Length: 149
Image (tube, rainbow, N blue to C red; front, side, top):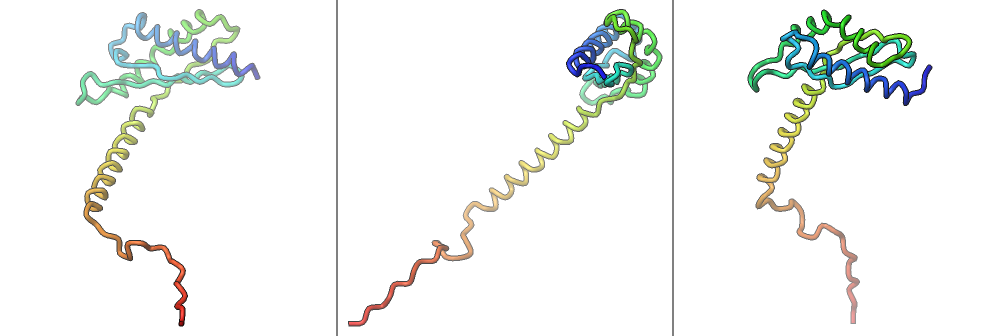
């Protein structure tokens, strides 16, 4: 087990190296819209998981997840050698690429929040001009004792 700070620094460095290699050195057109979002490394520094997203070319276009996954798998050896040369660690960690679901989750949360805002607006619209079902002052007051003269 290594120091957590060292593992975090190495993880960040691996992400930077992989992102730079994808952008400048790997000439696969399927990797044109791939973005490295995060990197995690095991405590023994043997295995690194690289999370990535694939952005669509336009707003309406669906991203090519299968093509990007295949391109990353085929470039895994080159990327691992770049990581080994760029980090200088004794054992170069194996790389595993995982599609990051964070953008999809964020989109779903945004949709849920928009629905909640619409429901709140509907409740506020219905509440305008409404009256309470009970008395205007619902709190009990002590009864005044009747005085007899």
